[in-house]
Image 1: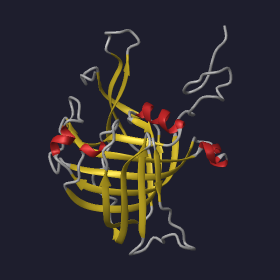
Image 2: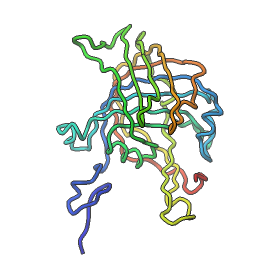
Image 3: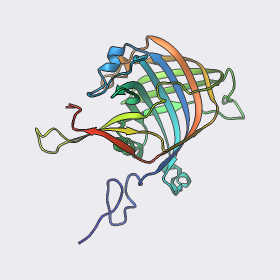
Image 4: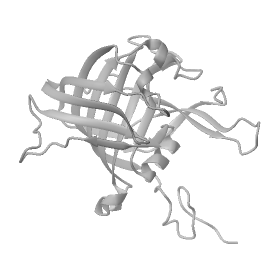
Length: 268
């Protein structure tokens, strides 16, 4: 009997065509983070049971742009850059589960199919989008990492611009913000192929970095705008009060998560 291989679809005799390799997955990235406060009710409507609003600062949101290079354990994708490089923009809120505070990604857009597949496995609600951000460089007109440096960032999906920001660095910071600083509480959902059977997969999981390293964080100010779009709801997380903006280079390893509970989300 023939067997097929591969961590993800498509599975083949060799497994070489699999969209993503098996973990651990390694990431190097430049992050621009803009934190602000919205109406906590708009955060609450995005939290399925049994998740609750965070006890402190429940309306805090982080909108993050990331320019990534990623690879499997052998690093081979780095030498075939089309398989390693991608960009994403994502909105993170905080929530509580059994008295513990978690971060949760509620919207996220990426520009490569392998990043979509990885995200679905991890419980990130990934969609395709167009994401761009200014890259630092020590020569020429690009900004250096220093006080007064200015970075632009844009996000679009389905031919509509959803967000844009200009971040101006002010000084070194002890942190890269607080909204995205906790383990992630995500759901993994898959509808049953049979009508009326609900969810075939319904898991609440905890996930985060198996290891993490980072350069000096910088804090600054941001000019952030969100835009309405027919098939997107990011603008419902309306900007009520700016908090701060940050820049940081990071290195992350992801190598699985932990099942918190299953079959209780009530998702439709």
